[in-house]
Length: 82
Image 1 (cartoon, rainbow, N blue to C red):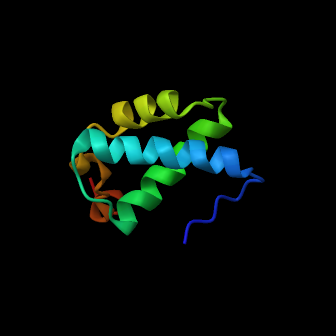
Image 2 (image 1 turned 90 degrees about the vertical axis):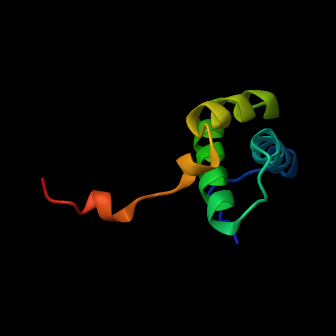
């Protein structure tokens, strides 16, 4: 379950949800729990920065995560020694 950590109204959650759904439709992929958590977190961050419409949020999510592969987090990279 996703914890938004904000006092969001139902209409705000609907805006965030629609933006994430649009990202999935745009990329023609089936939602997964991990991807949804990442996209929702990013959408909440963008929402808190003042982006309040589903269209604006979806556009920013699509720009930030331009493909399903961009959602993958490579945990070993952060611990790699250079």
